[in-house]
Structure formats: C-alpha cells, structure tokens
Length: 527
Image 1 (tube, rainbow, N blue to C red):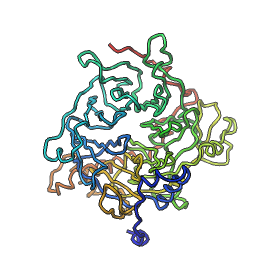
Image 2: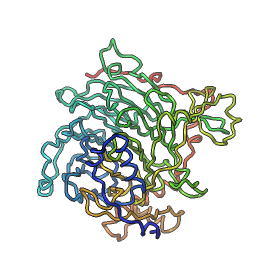
Image 3: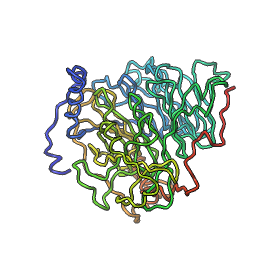
Image 4: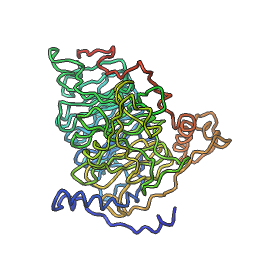
C-alpha cells in the first residue's frame, strides 16, 4: 500500500437522508460530488458464495441486494441490517450458472435466469426476518418458466407490473411473460424470433411501452411492445422504432467493424443508454439519437495524466460485463461504472448531454483518411456514410481496486453512496467514500496493489492444470475455488486479452450496417 494511501484520513459518512433534505437540487448534486471527491477508497468483502458471482441487482427501494453466479444459490442481502456481514436469505433452485437477476416493480418477486434456459421466480413476501434464513433451509422458487431453448442472457421486469417481464436468450427469442397466466398452457404472451442470438433486453424505465434489445451480431434497437407483441394488425418491423449505429471505422483501417454488444442499460430517466461492447469501449447514446455522444475509456489516469504505453488500463475482451448508471444519492444519474479485464472498476462522471453533443465531430467519408488524429474511431451506418466521432471520456473519476481477477459487474446503489462489484472471485466487494456508514462495520482502506498476470511459466501451468482437474494436489480448500477460477481466466487473458475488434468483427466495404428487422428471423405468436 502506498504511503499516500496509508495517510488518507478517515472520512465521515454523510447520511443519504441529508442528501434528500438538501435545500435545492443543485445542492444535493454538489453534496454527492463533494462526498465522492476522493472516489470510494474504503471497502469490504461480502462473502457467502462458493464460486464466481456473475449477477447483482438491487430492489427499487434500495433495501435488497440479490446475487447469484456459478453455485446453486441466490443470495439476498438486507441493507436495513445493522451489520451487512452475511446474506439475510438464501434461495435454492438454479442448476447451472446464473447470469441475470431482476426484481419486480414492487420488489415482491425476484427472477433468475440461467444457462440451462430456466427462469425461476422467488417470492420475497416472507423474507422479512433475517433469523429465519439462518435457522431454516434455503427457500425454493415460487414458480418457474421454461419457454426458452438456450441460455438466458437477461431478464427485465416491467417498471409497474409485478408479474410481467421480458427475457432475452441465445435461442434468438425475446419473450414477453405474464406469471399470472395458467402455467398449464403458457405464460408467454408474445415471442419475438430472429436468427441472431439476443444478448440483452431492457424495459424503458418510464415509457413502459418501449424496450431496448441487442444481439450478438451488434444490432441495437429500441422497440415498441405494441408493435412487437400486439394484435397481428399492429405488428410491424418486429417492433423496431429506432436503431442505434454500432458499426465503427478506424482511420488507417480498410475495413469497418461491428462489435458485439453484450449488455445495455438505461439511466433512471431513460434519457441515456449505455452499451457494453466486446473488444471496444463502453458507448453512450441518448434515447432519440442513432449516433453515440460519448465513449468511456481509461486512456488517462484519474489525475489526468496519460497512461503510459505498456501499463494496463480499461479493457473488455474476455467476459460478459454489465455497467450501471447511478447518482449515489443524487436525483440524477451523473455517474457510470464498469468493470474491466485489468482487475479494476472504473467510475466516470458524465458531463451534460448538450456539451457532449457539441463535442461530437462529423467527418465526411471522403475526408476520413486525411484527418489529423491517426487511429481515430468513428461510427457510421455504412462504408460510404459520414463518420460520427463522439466525445471520449478518457479521464475516469476513480479507479477502484480490491479484486484479483476480472471484474464483470459494477452496480451503483440507487440512494446510498455504495458501489458493488463482483466477477471471477467468490465475493462481492462493497465500496464506499466513507469509513463509517450504515449497514456496515467500520470499513478499511481498499488495498491499492493490482495483481498482474504473469507470462506462462511452470508455476502458472501447474495452476492451470489443477484448475482443469488434470492434476490433484493439496491446497487450502478456502482458496481452492478462487485459485482455480483465477488460473483459468489468467490463461484466457493470455490468449484473448486485448483482442482487436477490426480483426475479430471485420466488415468489408460491401457489408453495410443492417438492422435485425431485415434478418431472416420472423415473429411468431404464442400458443
């Protein structure tokens, strides 16, 4: 730990109730910015899982944190507890890896989706006593739904109706579910089918007739429920009302590329949409604009200095990741957080939308290769279309440490200054700007050292062989699962890290950006 980090004085907690009682909106935002001036230097581990933690979600009221991953349990953590040290409740049911969790509108139900295509519904109406979970067995699911034929990539609950949700799957289907329907027939109220596997789905948080989707071919669309699943006379274009341009060009490259979008998220007002792209930087759009207004990167350190060549920085080449908007107690989602292959979590402060749009540059195709900025990235509908170069948010507000492997999920608490992160390891890390806070005992400063991935050598090969089960020797059982998972993903980083999207997802001049409503898939009715 650096001496500067050791000498940091403990900061006192500013209760989120004080933020709510601020005399004006601007003072609330100022209070949050002041609280986060030094980032979130304190943290603790939340332990309970026995394998990778893939999914995190928080209920709308901010009380419950749900977590799930590669073990057969869904954990429920209660922020109303005096000490957040263990799960308040455990659910059983998943028979394979869980990559998505979602709370219903009121928080009564929690849904999980796994790689066996099972969707499980848990009823939280009897989980008010933390003592019950310690003295009894984990609770089974209240109901299940098995309409999909492949891995569930995402579940998004209706913002107002507890029993209604959308699911996206690698079987190429978006299904609209209503859990009130008779399970003996089908709970699928409508099915949207295409050839390309879907990677994400999200209801718009306010305009509930709208939802956004992405697929593994890079198509990102805003859709209307009524046009996608309504009466046959109203259906058209598979519900697509707006497309977002994700095809990119790079100065000096003859080809274009279309990165795979692995997840997406709205801010609380539904004004902004952020995409997580494999082998590319997270990208920020406004709802009505097909072109992005900003990209997030780690080219600079939080102090503004340039990251030196050879130093590790933000990247996403190896796993499915999930970013989040948040306000840390403010009324507006001015921050965006995302995990990285460099074992850190990045937090950016988002400037005003108008300012970002003003910074965006449009360059005609004919002038593209004569621009002064070599390697510049621009977004374009087709090879001969103008390139839109969004603003680059290259200076993160903070870089959070505390993990020894890839961070896949970063989740900002809706009304408390907490940021929760998880990934390859078995624990969740709760980050805070203050050393003392509700729901937690005094927090320690987060270790600043970031583990590096060593070049392949006899020791690393031994770890990999052990992780693959090829050799068996005595190790500490408490560390075995993490060590095995870390060894496996270290090898993935050695072979796949820093992949070039213009080699992996290249498009030739004749391959224009095409929307998924032009694909061979078709929409079908439920039974």
